[in-house]
Image 1 (cartoon, protein in one colour):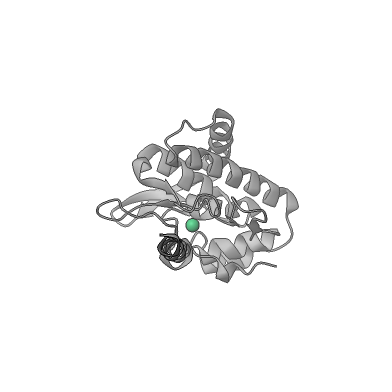
Image 2: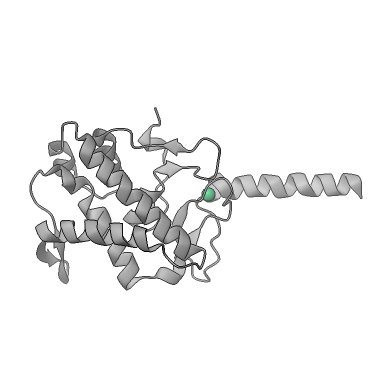
Amino acid sequence: MSDIANLDVFGGAACLDFANTLDGRGTESPEEYLHTYADLVSWGRYAGVLDESTARRLTGDHPAVLRTALRLREAIFQVFVALGRGQAAPTDSLATVQARYAEAMAVARLAPDGDGFDWRFDGDDPGRAWWPLAVSAVRLLTAGPLDRVKVCAAEAGCIGLFVDTSKNRSRRWCTMDGCGVDAKVQRQARRRRDARTA
Ligand SMILES: [Zn+2]
């Protein structure tokens, strides 16, 4: 079983981190981190989507909720991988995000947050594990910065999604010590090979 604590949280937006819980999408054996509802809750806590007391209360096995969450995750992935590649977002995936967002908003409460207000969720409904992720996706879609959503340059293996917050928009890799290192190793191997054949 994949240990959630091994998963890097590098997306810069909760919805993209959520999309990245299916890791190595471009490889022959993508790694699924969310096998059970409990995994979804643990990841939510790990990624900062759920506070600790909420995560403790969201117990039990809820396969239907997990399925809904994973369908939302795949819709989020399809929307943002398209946008990250400069393509149009697929309408069916957008419709899924919209529908889940509408469900979440129906139970959300507007509450003071810092100098302003933000949406809050109360109670122990199992859906609480994914509601904030629908909100995160729509927030990124409506408020951006969409032009900073990128697909890891190691596309063939990783297809990790992230918001590039670097000043000169130069970030190419999901993680420098993951795909960034792999790319460096490949470049060095290529240089050595080229040097030999030159
Ligand atoms: Zn990557």
